[in-house]
Length: 325
Image 1: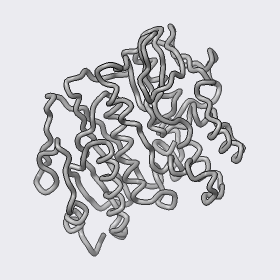
Image 2: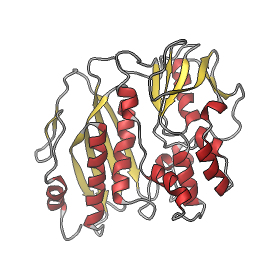
Image 3: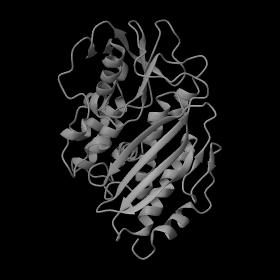
Image 4: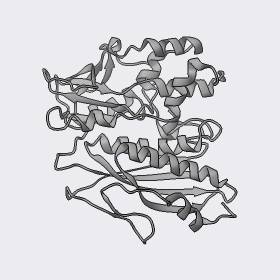
């Protein structure tokens, strides 16, 4: 980076990129210009810090770039909006290889395109460690935002996407297991690059809009707890509906509990929502519980005794935390 310089690198990582339809003016001016046809934006931002949220000896630069976009795109989609544009601020030491930044940029563009948007601009600065900060924009297309506060007693709780596999990948990386073992390939890939099922939410518009919705970033129990509190209800999760024999097989190899990964592992970036009692749950979703009167989250009617998910400031530096849990 010291040899190439900021502006040469900006030109290099933006060369040949094609902006999404909502980005009217991308990198190259004082600011980007993004369309807002709905008259509103959904906006979310998140930050990843090397050694705290990712490690270059665990993930490739492309993986890190994809992950940075995916976790932001999932937040936008969890509000019922289609991702349109991403703005990225990146800090790195002067001795960072240019290939690392190029890889991160490539990963960001891959995931931004998968989500339906593009990288509209950002900033590049020198810092003591590698830091990636992303702001995501989304368009509601005339629909109401889907918040966490709409669940009602009797609603069905359903999930789209996989649960527990990111936690399994993290256990492989932190537990000293052989990362070349093919039995761990899928868990590692899922942890390194989450796969939010964007279409499961966006394709449900018009006929299957959930009453409440969130993405699973901190852990299923933790994120359902946020939804329950916002809606002033309780939620009971059915353990049998969450069973995953393939994940059980990985857990057995690591002498671990797959149920704990599913309930509290986090960083799956699946979506969990609620639908009125008797409603048809859309394709790509599976029922896992029910909304009840009261407060908090239970599993088969019993309050969980283990951890429920990740909390940023209770983690330990230089180990997986926040978005690594």
